[in-house]
Amino acid sequence: MLVELARSMTVEEWEDLAQKLNEAGTKLRSAGIRVGYHNHNVEFKKLPNGRLALELMLEKTDPKLVDLEVDLGWLTSTGLDPADFLKKHGARVGQVHLKDLKETEPNTELKFHTATLGQGMQNWDAILDVLPSTAVRNAYVETSPPHETSGLQSAAEAYAFLQPLMAGKRL
Image 1 (cartoon, rainbow, N blue to C red):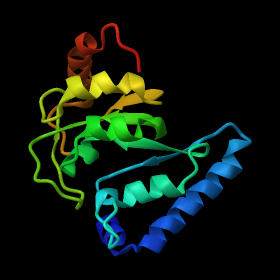
Image 2 (image 1 turned 90 degrees about the horizontal axis):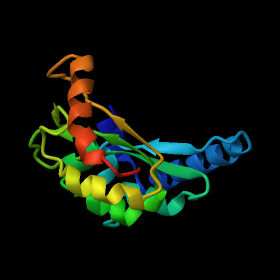
Image 3 (image 1 turned 60 degrees about the vertical axis):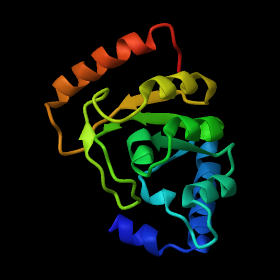
Image 4 (image 1 turned 180 degrees about the vertical axis):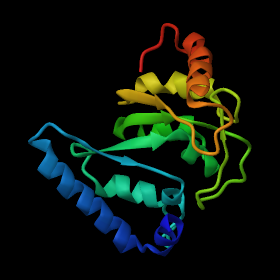
């Protein structure tokens, strides 16, 4: 359903969504809450004007009100490089989902298969090198179904993978 909705959205509808995010951000700001938009891969489809939907939303949302919560797995599934994306848009990224994936044909159709962190196609060295130069305040390890192992085993493996890579680094 999300794919069909995103596929059918016009430039004007993406702009309207951005405006709604701004409105929510304005209302929540007084309570000290920031709006964060979590991506999948459908937001990386090209619009009729040749722009990516997510880039249009970034342009039309107020950076004082709306952050991105970038899911690196979904981003990578589009064929884009997450380190390059973070270099370009890192000032707008408040949170990231550290997600790995198996080799995936680039798409914007909600298709990819998760992998245990460090056992997929992500270039973690490049990603972790660029994170300190972004506005990222929180990072979450995430896997999506179908899971290869139990949640606890996956968390332990992710920690074992990330711990030496993160030594001496900050987010």
